[in-house]
Image (cartoon, rainbow, N blue to C red; front, side, top):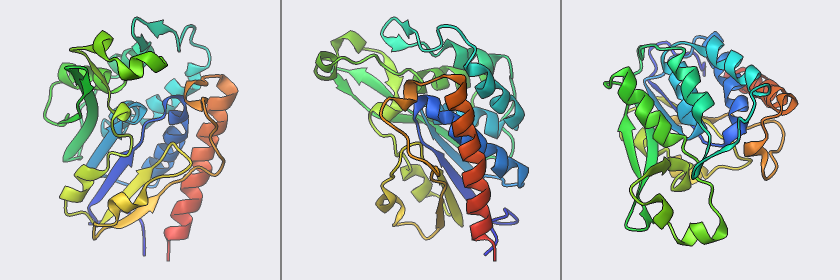
Length: 245
């Protein structure tokens, strides 16, 4: 069975994982180079950031941005209650674009209300650039949680935070669409594949060829990012090759 788009309706899920998003950038570059087109894209946390460059057809800018990460000062500095996501938002502001052929483009986030994290998502496709940026900001606001803060969310009351704090395997919307294939790019070593077993679509996982370690999500050293990006290229090329008949 060929993996090329053709008339197939394909959905894509991009998991969250901070600096490990460089791996996703490698996978996305190969998928784009192979001509894959997506009917629906869902992104969590750094996956939401990466999804912007995919749906606006700016993968080269995404890759260049990841390769520059290692030289950005204070890139993981704490900005109030959150790790600083300014570099991510500035990268998007510097590359304004319109979502192309994708029909639905979802990101998830977590409003904190009454000391509880809710779970919400938004379809960014019909929104203005400014509104898209706002929800990507929410989706990439990684809280600086201490053990105490995990219990007491009052410091975050009324704020919207990273959706991966509630669900970092947010594939559910893909089950609502009539898709022929679903592609999943995990940023963890394992993924709950049972969540997509109810679909009639063919599901293809692009797992990393190496193992991520605890804390890798905050490792923005240039050599780590380059290694993970290369992993993404390797994994995508091998997975696509294995899917050919």
